Length: 563
Image 1 (tube, rainbow, N blue to C red):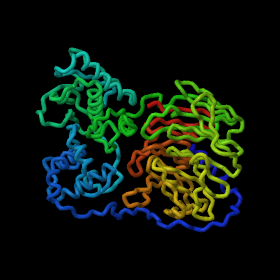
Image 2: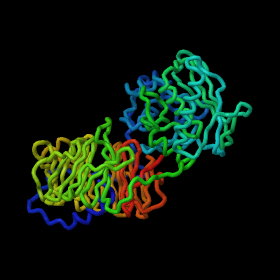
Image 3: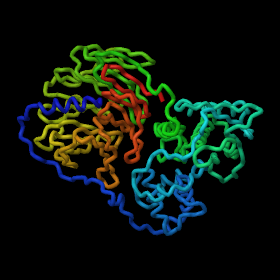
Image 4: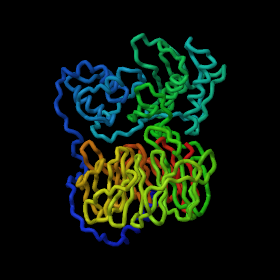
């Protein structure tokens, strides 16, 4: 659902008539507390240190890559279980204190060798809420940088090595106002590229050495070195490694987001530059202009929907808009193409490659992707006031307070936990159903939604909106506070107090529209948000799981984020 629809629907829900049904609270109550500064984030149980000593090298390597060790120091064997728990919190995994098979596979494989300088704040931080991207501190003072090869590998022609490095620099130049070019033959370059033998058992693909005065990088003293004991005939691996190391060259340290290019370990997948990488580089150098580009200007545009999938690319994924005339359009290759034009259309919703529409008579339809061919889902029902698409399901909210899920060929009712009518629902990728009631209570039901399976998890009357992204859950309170559900407790943790008016989440990304119309994206650190739009007047925002963002303005204009 579009962000501004949350606020509009809130007013609609309050005028709904009372349900004729008699409700009984059948669910359990399991209220989640708020976090306090002194509350421990995880219980650290003892683990026999002898079981962990064989993993000491991997633990120490991780600590060095993320700046958690003082120069010349190492993690004592007696502290290994505690150190493993800290790593597990960083990776958002189960905090057991035991070295898992997943950690072994990751840490024994290829990795970057660039060690982060000791950061006392990160080293002492035991919380779950690490900043995702991390900065070295220094940056380049000049906006034009030069580079040159100091030595080459014999695996590839020199011309291909040069073009690969140029392409890797260009990927970062897509996002920031920097110009990075080969150095003239008679000039000293800012950055050197070289190959060297690390030894047959070394798992490092490469590393970057940097010299700075603490504020700016030192020209001519920045070196990217690739391990020449690897075979570099795979162009995709070569450019991926180069993009990672150049991220260090530009001032980025290692990220805790495993899908980010700047994550320290390589799992065999060639990943694109992640929103986390972009947030980090933007925080250093700002934005490449223009930041936004206008893709539509129509005063009849009512709302936007982004259809996005968690792990596959579906044919019907993409950006859609609905106009007040009922017309539905899809943005494709720079143009808006009509997929339906029915004056009875009241709402659109979509997820996991599926686009749906609801008519004013309560009937619901799914787009087949073929011309204007829509598949009807059940009979019209004027009791329906809202549809919500999530995972591979479509849900309806009803005037009588009940929720229904389409299981084909019928709608299956999901028992309502109380006499309070639903204000908003949100569903995770695993189909956990969250329900915000009109009294502000938040209740939850797990798939497949057995009778009496509702759990009351929050009884704050100030809750006005909810959002889910992947498996993450967020709520917005009437005072503009945004709160995240930290499942390590679980407990509620405040992440923004800057006057949010609406929130939207997708995948691992969370967006907030402030009361002044500016758009912000959460970095993953408590209270740290990236401002995407300083012009204001946005009334809605949608996004995909790869960091694509589109905003709807009050005058009906649609803008897409360029970088």
